[in-house]
Length: 300
Image (tube, rainbow, N blue to C red; front, side, top):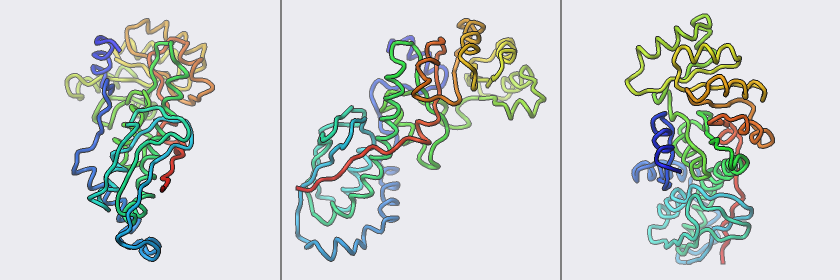
């Protein structure tokens, strides 16, 4: 991506990374993984304690069972390290890597009890985030060459937003606003509160929002697009519009604002939507409906 495009994305509050950066600090990583291990009561794993000698060592590998994109390995590593500080790990395919079935993602060696007790927690993290990354990559590939970009939404698992949005980036997508303070997004319910007066809503937002904050208006009709443009909106969300109306809206905006298609987007329709000329396509399904990627921990 060129520097101009990168600057445009940053200016509108969207996250794009040339290099993938894990979103949690070490303390945050330790805390969230510790909570997951406590939830699974891994310190009282009666099955492992009953069947595996305390001095038994083991080697295993994390293996992909299907094609996908990896995300969440730092969480898995932390889980294994918390139960066995002496564990050794070698990552073969880092987050953001596309893998094929039966591909070893990482190798581990350590105390068998620690590896076994941490297994489920580690897999839960990586399977969930890799599923998001994989679904995102499918959407990104579906619109290749159109000039449009795939974005996520705030339809994330409570308290896991940064991780799930990180997984979207691992799959090649962009992040929409991280939270309610990141940008102004005037939706239909906000407009209902001002009797549908887009100009009034935008002017109030300009008066209250911090300097540099972009203002986006959700439109589901072409007359609203015109009103939003007249009001000076920076981004026009075209919500649940038919393809014909999307094309007309893009012509109406004529590059004076960013256009974003949203609502009911699927893998079957996303290419057609992208070909209307919209800049961005937001897909809630990336985080609220992504199936887990099939991964397994195979012991030697």
